[in-house]
Image 1 (cartoon, rainbow, N blue to C red):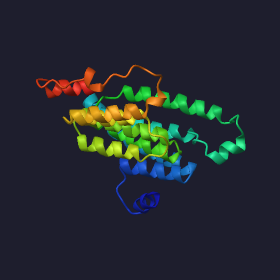
Image 2 (image 1 turned 60 degrees about the horizontal axis):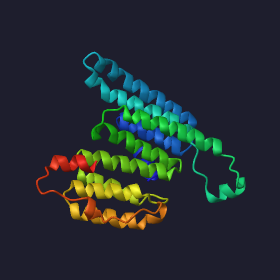
Image 3 (image 1 turned 30 degrees about the vertical axis):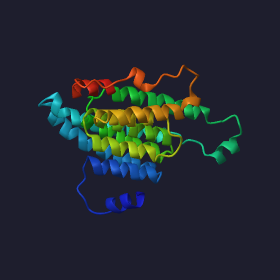
Length: 245
């Protein structure tokens, strides 16, 4: 896919925020620090002009440009992300991994990103570009579990906004990610089925997955799903949506 990106960027085109982000990601893929800094500086300058004009009108008009700066800042911060070690790299370093400090640095920065995302407007339109960018960043650095988590965030935001087809696509992408598939992926799938009105399928899917993942949890008394959950016929769609979230 990077060949296609490089081919597109090599053609004459109008420079905008999306093109600038593509240029920065391409330079990151090529490990070209000079081009990364050059494109970051240009992208910030291109954003500051419209931002200054929008600030004269309202915060609402300025907010999209603030989100662009948010994304550029995360692109710059991501340059220090350390990739997940491959089995060969693990063997080289022995059982005591020398890159434990890198893992801690990664975790601290990703925790900060999570907190920053919570401060953005809780809408699909605002958060989707940020999450898609993060997913690409994580894949570039070999952080596949983090990339899958981004797909799950996108699926949730789309589901809450009633964009069910987008949510399904995001869950399929999460399923195709490398690495083990956590239970929360199947819970997200059940929530989407519930939100779409497929209550029986959602409950059955959830019960199957809980049984499949049972070894991961301490033993508890077996309680059939239907003994604790039911679908009242007079429940409104909005109440069902709140319940599934």
